[in-house]
Image: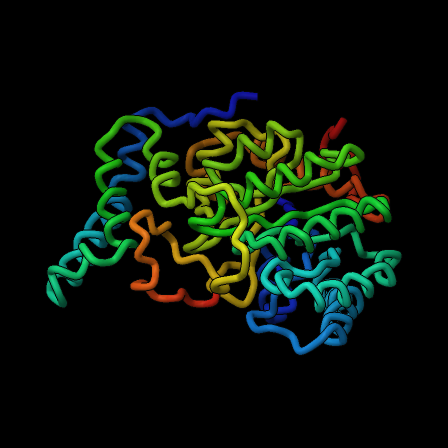
Length: 108
Length: 277
């Protein structure tokens, strides 16, 4: 059974360009919104530092998604000795400043 | 197209959602035991919840001609509490013989603590002791990679495990291969923000093929969509994938996996749904 997308490259762009253009604009609007509030803040929040690194991975070749997933993932292998919070936040604090971020909303 | 949603927390959904499921072709759901969004006050609350899963929900689903099956478990979000977990696990065997209980699930890890791993391990032991199928929750977001690896490592440590009777759910691009390589079924859960979109699920079917992969909506009390599976069907059709492939992912694959329990009855007949051999 052939499971590759039957769409050719031009058809993929025709089909998906507008919705991804929208997503790109949403990211730009989010970053501008944050800058209007405090242009220095992003450098102090590990989630936004990871976000910026994630944007840089988009300029690479195929495999962007997994590289991005790995960038945001906890790379450690040892269990936590005790429960620290109930939900994940979305990015791993590679800079060791996790007390500066929010505790995260309850998630299913 | 008829489909089965193997992961739907229907206790959190309205009767209108059952109607939407039925109108879009859903013929069966399976409902893992999960966190209510807040911590329950004691093991007795879990017993009431298990009765709801095994008595009330099957009747509610049947009103819409949907088969409802369920899984019993101490959920990962409360599994760090070892005392409560032991009390809940002691109450589970009494429910395992009920006609719609397929196995133990969803068990697994949340923040990947030592206590969570201990409870997870005990629930695998419970499943094996009672010849039950297993449905595994994997953690979300930054915890998914580490949590999936440890979950699979613990599973692989049980020599009597039957991989084709185990599904590791909430798989994503960076964890799917690990699950498939160990011989387990993998679930892709379609969720607006914290899991997988219909487009990414279709991408994974294109990259990995349809073997041992199922898709589900995982609808619950959070932002989620009870008709996420039909949206996946639409996404596959948008790419002009054959209905044969789509049907395999949304109906035949869950039938194959869920048939690991002798209690599961295939909606309709095999002849009408095509060869499954």
